[in-house]
Amino acid sequence: MLFRDIDTKIAVIGLGYVGLPLAVELAKKFKVYGFDINKQRIKNIKQNYDETGEVEKKKLKKTSAIISSDEKILLNANVFIVTVPTGINKKNLPDLRILKKSSTLLSKYIKKKTLIIYESTVYPGCTEEICIPILKKNKKFKYNKDFFVGYSPERISPGDKKRNVTNITKIVSASNKKALKQIKHIYSKIVKSGIYVAPSIKIAEAAKAIENTQRDLNIGLMNELFVFFNKIKIPTKEVLKAASTKWNFLNFHPGLVGGHCIGVDPYYLTNKYKAVNLIPSIILSGRKTNNDFHKFIARKVDEIIKDNNLSKKKILVMGYSFKENCPDYRNTRVYHLIMDLQKKKIKLKIHDPYLQENKDNFPFKNLSIESFEQHQNKYDLIILTVPHKIYLKKQNKILNLLTNKGLIYDFKSKLKNNKRIIQF
Ligand SMILES: NC(=O)c1ccc[n+]([C@@H]2O[C@H](COP(=O)([O-])OP(=O)(O)OC[C@H]3O[C@@H](n4cnc5c(N)ncnc54)[C@H](O)[C@@H]3O)[C@@H](O)[C@H]2O)c1
Image (tube, rainbow, N blue to C red; front, side, top):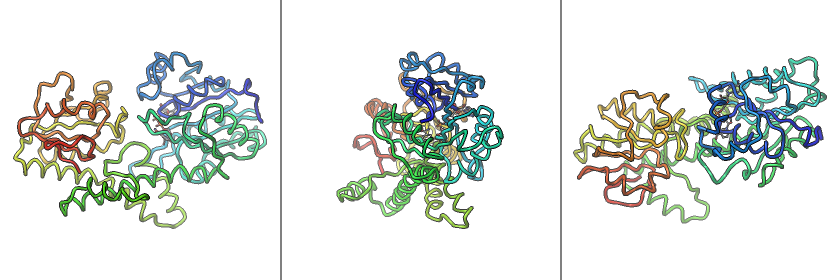
């Protein structure tokens, strides 16, 4: 082992959806430092407020983790865990700028026995081809002799309160046996559901990338079927119900695929395909189907309005975040749906419980954000885009928001059956 527990000092780099819960759990067992360049985020965490909704106030109040936006705190650490964003650019190419920047930063803080673990999602080969060469620029210390590297993908799903960092099997991998032993030991202190040792860093990277790619493709298939079943006028919900009676039929449903993982990670893989002269036709086809799905929903909305003689002015969109029960609306596909509906001259109002707290970055400044509690307005059509738990609990309240002829378009089919509700 590289360190005794008492000497293990861990710095978590990037305190977002992944980094903050990890830092808080690790701080129960080790000395932990949390570093983030976003000063406002640091201020909020220090005031025990996590705007991602992942870590409760009382846990933040109790944590011993030292949080800062001052990189000097990194001087204290001998283990670094990198949880910074890895997005894509406008051309759907991996945007590794932040990962590279963090590696450059950490290269300055390498000491003898330093261990650097990457958790950010990447393509197979990224850690060894991009990150390690940057770390190696520190000529004072030798890779795998003085400092070591690991890769351990994060597999949480934002908004999922049941599965968290402590009960999801943790995949670990490392640059050598010594580092692997240390990484296994660190995570086993907080992860109760087991550690899985991947034979290499590349395998661990690939495993993470394919998990979300598989999910993306399965949803893509459902979306494609949904369009087809709509055309031949049979309810997708009933087809899926019937098919699900077979033991090996997988439980996937149509839906808008946004956010930072499922809609992004497949592109990390496809770019690697291209680098080795292969064409990832199935993966890219699934991506296209999911990226275009909002267009179909917009056409359906238009059709529902026309067929039922509804007013184009009394329409409410319910749900803006990229997935249920999550306040994050970066890369939400509801954005594209709203753009399509506006092009069709449909006047919208919007509601999302999380928008009330986080209006600043909402891009549609001309859209009225409705408050569910003091609702005065009645709607001819409610489009349930993101079926947050609170909506499902308050189905009757939502039904009461309808005009006499009003309808709800619940294209994810999450509400209970009702003649006023159109499902998939
Ligand atoms: N969100 C998820 O549920 C999830 C699940 C599995 C894997 N991942 C992966 O984990 C990684 C992190 O995702 P996230 O959702 O936590 O991102 P996030 O955007 O919520 O948080 C990232 C944090 O890093 C900070 N940051 C940015 N640049 C920095 C820098 N140079 N130095 C220090 N901090 C910096 C940001 O201010 C932000 O607080 C990504 O690779 C993502 O793909 C995310």
